[in-house]
Image 1 (cartoon, one colour):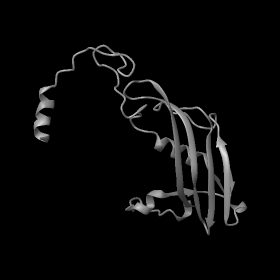
Image 2 (cartoon, one colour):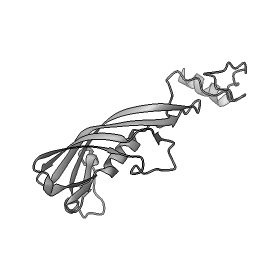
Image 3 (cartoon, rainbow, N blue to C red):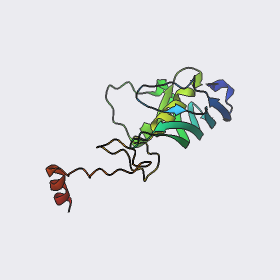
Image 4 (cartoon, helix red, strand yellow):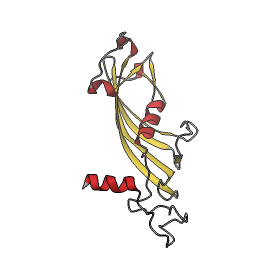
Length: 171
């Protein structure tokens, strides 16, 4: 969704959905959107600085990293970013960044496209190791059965010498 900065007096509330066609896909994630990504963002303009804040909700499907079963994932995210004109960006080849600098984005021209910011917020919130539930038992490394649904009589894998040394070191 494009926002024209000239249309913002002080505050503008933008509600909408980002459908699956407008949501770019990447090959490095197994996220499948079940519903369009919904957002209700408050866009505030202070001189040249633009602040965008508000909730973003996602309904998706992912594979569990332990048992490989598909499960539904609901995420309620809180987006909060600040944008300043690209002309204020320092020309220095190297500069020291502070914590406040990490939340600042830059824009050019008179329009801001919200879609890339919403996409980034969703992608950064995807769990690195998604779990269908915390107590998921996973797949047996010997027989390949899903331990959540089928009993497994395989013996526990013998611990390695390195694992034993690490245990003794930690104790």
